[in-house]
Length: 81
Image (cartoon, rainbow, N blue to C red; front, side):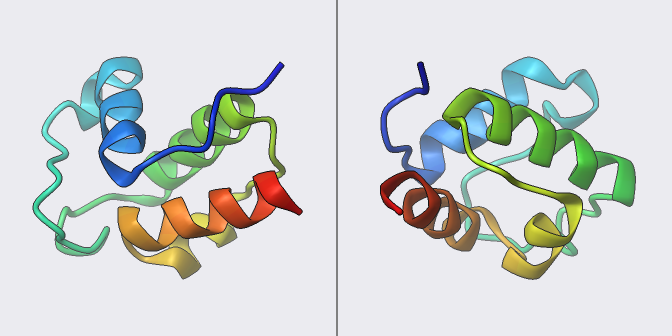
């Protein structure tokens, strides 16, 4: 069973608590580039978020979203599709 529809803050907290290297991530609206996230981080975000919410999500989706607000919208769309 998947988790309920997330908020950006929920996604950030999920990432911070599951990936030690990303414990510095904040909800201040910065883009993934501004947070200096590398491709491995993008894969980890895609995997954790996809598994938690039961939606297909790849590294490309995370990169294209660009920040947690847009990633949240993408996840919401896929949950309700």
